[in-house]
Length: 137
Image 1 (cartoon, rainbow, N blue to C red):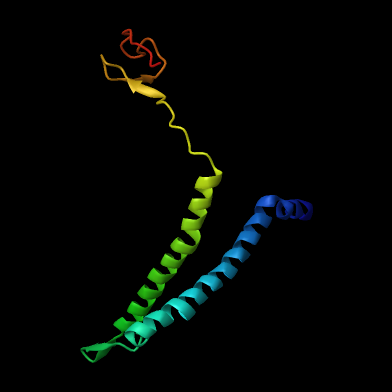
Image 2 (image 1 turned 45 degrees about the vertical axis):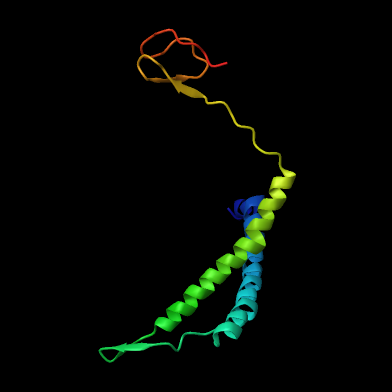
């Protein structure tokens, strides 16, 4: 059993997953630093304070801390914006340059003009009504 467990751990999938998890955690710290230390500070320079968590109002003697929600929402929007513009867009640009565009594939199925049953595109007869049909070239 111990040998099987060691073989399981030695497979590439587990090691790849571990490396990906570690890279994700470290990269998450970089993105969080970009958002908190750069983007939120720009907002602080414009608005006056980057932390809205002190904004509250009272409802039946209970403080409603809507400012904490606004801070979390702003952090989310800025984080996803940073991920999109600094990761997704560059990766998509590199992928478009490296990989050739996918050729449009011909449809594999079509409808029979008589019974409207779905038949293979190269078929000469409908499998449902047996009527003769022209194959797609």
